Image (cartoon, rainbow, N blue to C red; front, side):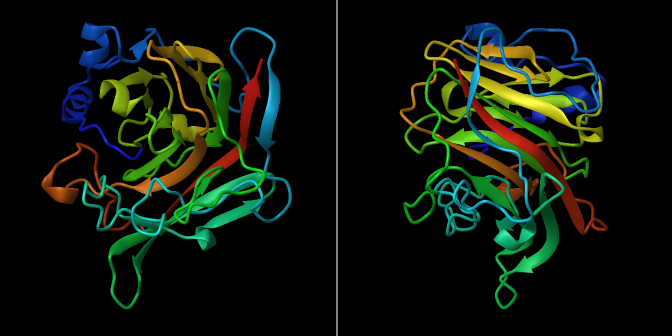
Length: 297
């Protein structure tokens, strides 16, 4: 989620009605996240599922209560340049993100974490951002701190999030790992202009993604997005079905999990990422997270 891969070819193919299931690097080198083919079955509210074998939950948040558990989650991240909450001023580019992430855009109610993106200039007196939104992370913050009961994932872990993603075009929800020196794992990225497509991958490893056609609008209900962080491979799952695999192992000695709702800025930095910005009449959008879990065998 921090280092965007430009996907103009994908956008063009989808616009032409072509189903794309694997990027060219994956198909040619064998190192990228090779898609398994086929489509996933539509499910309204999937149960949490794991790969084959006996797995035990080592960390979980099901968002009970009415406030975010700040012993488990922080609301800024060392992955973002501007105070851990935005990408404005980043010398490497804004990453096509137009939002500044604020704790007040996070709400816990009814066993769900709701992240709300709002069209709102920030800061009000000298705006650098046209939207505000929210993120949560289990790990390192902009000042080097971390929540005391957060999760740090390592080789052999399986991570998953059950969530209802935003279906508003221009939004960009994601669930990913982060530890600055190590390549991130994007267990899901989602762009509602391609409503049936689950994007998974490891941008710093293979600079490519698997674009999995789920055969159903993923924003229409809750789905479970997972990644097995093996020492010799990373496998990606949707509703318990393996959809892609990357044969470069996960080597981090402790990476954080991040859940966020970004707002796409299509032409930031003078480049076109192929995904629309929100329409002018869109002022708000949400995603809802049911649970985040870490498993180990």
